[in-house]
Structures are given as structure tokens and as C-alpha cells.
Length: 378
Image (tube, rainbow, N blue to C red):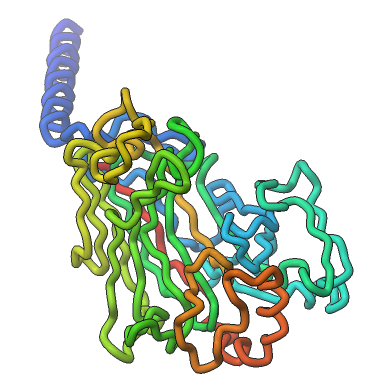
């Protein structure tokens, strides 16, 4: 009995020591990361360097991860889509997320656009700005003629510092506007753009949209930071990178990996592991933006990365058109742009030209397709 007890005590001591050695070995291997995260799908608040902390491979559309916007607001750019929560416009198939644009008239009829009332109940409308919850159609100002989707992780996953990887294929079709981007969990420093915006990918679905001899459609995409004391003072031009594909080989022809590396010192944007641009914090983004001396620095008290020293959430969306200039009036397209950015009835002008632009939308290729989204701790 005593021998057995002594042997058991020896085994217990050995296991305790072995466990302690394993723990210390793990602690040596685990380099503490500056990354933080918050949300229902967050894996804690302390991470090891290179730890995978968020992932979706889209075996299904997990509505616990992705909240779907419901608004007519047009993203603040008077875009022409109505964001809806509908399986026709956002769905997972064969391990891919599809964001698929459709006609509003297919649901409500053609007359609805010019004489109906689109009203989203207050408990469902996700953004009332820019008449986002209610619009009344008139012949000159029709209701948003396209239905699409915008998915985001504001409730499930927000993070600060880390590496975001998204493998995606941009859509093909005139006036389509796919985007992968991030917004702050809360407007800690103030309203847009004071609290910042991070655009990993923005592109255009036009096959042959030419500006100054350059294809700015499917053969180009941009990555950008938006920041500034107010909308009139936005430092994005000092934090904007454009990548051109090979001529005739647009980014719509295959999937590419788009990467954002976000550290307490800098940003790096990449495609297929090739860097396209780096932004160092330097002495801070107020100095980087070169804003006038008579404007107060809204980021006093923040770190040199402010406003990008707060947690942001991920957004995937497919917009259409708009009047903010993303589709320049001076660009040439095989079928000319049907609306002007200064037109009071741009949405109507766009819709009346559908016999031209809809020919460029293919049932499958006009979808914005996302293979996976992954976030790693630094």
C-alpha cells in the first residue's frame, strides 16, 4: 500500500513538472500580440503573434458573423442600390459568398419605381441617413432600382492591429462597385472621416472604362485610408494606392488575395503577397494630412496612429453607380455613362439606360465572390 502511494505521488509530481515545462515552453513560443478584438465571435482579448482570430470560409452564410444592412441610403454617395437582407442577393454556394445584384422591379413591378413608396420599418432599417429608411418614387427621382447586399461584422468581430486577408473575385458589369473595407466600431474621435475609414479594395466592374488612356475598370483597384478633421479636409490623397493589372487581364478574371497589414506603426496594402503601398504613421496623421494650421487636431490625446488606434469592423458590399465621382463623368465607356454626377435625377437616368448596361451583366460574373476572410493577430 505504501509503495503504491509513493509511486502515485511520484507520478503526480512528474505530471505537474511536465505540465509546467509544457506551459513555460508554450509561453516562450507565444509572442504576445498588440492586437485586440471584441465581439460575439471574438476569441478573447489576449492573442499570440500570428494567431488566427477570425475566419469564414463560407461553407454557409453565417448570420451570427455577418449582419446584413437594410437601407436605401446609398452608402452616403447617393448610390443606386437598395441594400436588403435576402437570400437572392447574398448567399453561400460551393464555398463562396456571392453578392448578387438584382432589379427592384422584379420584386415590386416597374410602376413601383416611379410612383411607389419604399419604407423600411424603424426596427429593421440599419441606417436612416440619406433618406435610408423611406423614399417615395417620382418619374424624375425613382426608388433605388437595384437590390444588393452589404455584410458587416460590427456585432460579431471588431479588431485593432492585425493582418486581414480576403480572397475575392471582383464582378464584371458596367457601373458595379465592389468594396472590402473597415469602419470604426464607434466614432471615438467624431463623425466621418474624423474616426477613420480603411479601404482594402475598391474597383469598378466596367471592362473598358478609360480615363486619360488608362483602364480604370476591372483592370484597376485602389486601397485607401480616409481621415481628417471634417469631410472638407480628408487626407485620403496622401494615403491612396492604385494597382493596374496586365492589359487585357483584369482582376475580374480570377481570385486574388487582398491583404491589409495594420500595425501600431504603419499600414501595408498587398495583393497576392506583393506590396502595393505602405503608410507610416510618422509623427501622426494630422501632420501627414497637411491640414491647415487654423484647424484643431481632433486626435490630440490619441496615439500617433490615431484615428487608426481604435477597433474597426469588416464590410463586404456591392454598390452600383453613385454621384460622388467614383465613376468620373469624363471617363469613356463603350456605352457612355448615362448619368451626370451633378444630375438631380441621376438614378432615373441610369435606370432608363438599362438596355445598354445590363448587357454587360452576366448571371454569374456580375456577382462579387469572396472565397474566405481571415484575420491574424500581429
